Image (cartoon, rainbow, N blue to C red; front, side, top):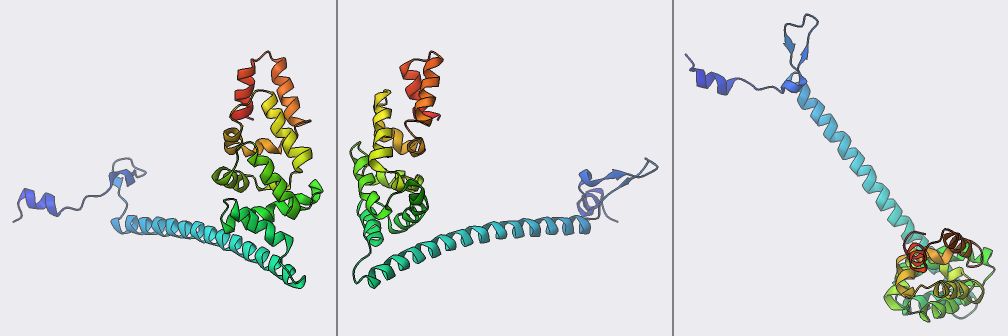
Length: 223
């Protein structure tokens, strides 16, 4: 005859959280451990499928970026070969690499900027040099340049003398002192037209009687 202790050890313990009262309210129905196991298996399988889809999506995105880079590089090389020399686009990409961008970042940034160059009415292969020089004049070089271009690649398509330089000058004019750090942390500021959006924002902040320090902080950190 089994003792009390052995009976307790041999009795299966079910998850009482699965118990529900029957219609009479006097007895409890407990989910079968086999059903619970199957449910856990289904949940685990669903999670695995979801994780697999996310991983596949990321791999596809990475693969697509690499294909774009290879296509851009191939197009630049073929254009250069057709002309019997290295194309201006290929030279511009190599120039970006020499300034601190890795090969993939240089190709991706140049490709993204090329779509904006049409609207800026600039020749991208020529404008790149002016942009890099303009940013370098305020201390944005090497690693900082790579960060800014990678985060905001269309900056390569901004007209340097008509758009980019005036924006940098205006930021200095309103009191921004650590300009290279501000641009590195918020390169999207360069996307604001200094004579339109940026100036209107600053004028509005001035109308609210904020101090120069507060305006500079807001422009540098929140716009």
